[in-house]
Amino acid sequence: MRLPLLASATALLLAATATAGPAAYGICQAGCSGVVMACYAAAGATWGATAGATAPASVLLCNSSYGTCCSVCAALLIVPTP
View 1 (cartoon, rainbow, N blue to C red):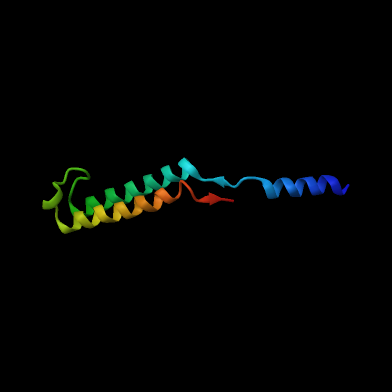
View 2: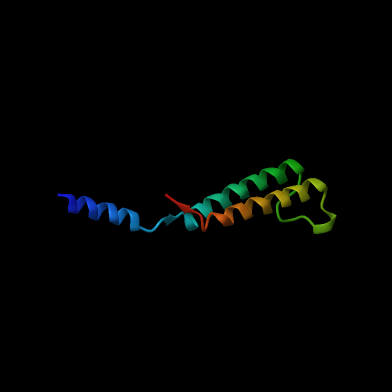
């Protein structure tokens, strides 16, 4: 009777940890994109249609925030989830 319990406990201990991977990354990227769209709309600009160095400070802040958000999402590809 102890053998099945021992085998189950061993299997649970040796099981690999699942990773969130592409699903969590995609959800996170969608969230970042939604936020940057709102940021651009609030700044009165169109996302992706701003000329780099001549962009207003508010648009540059949106770009910086979007880059930070995307870098956090990249970590979700490798973070193990229980």
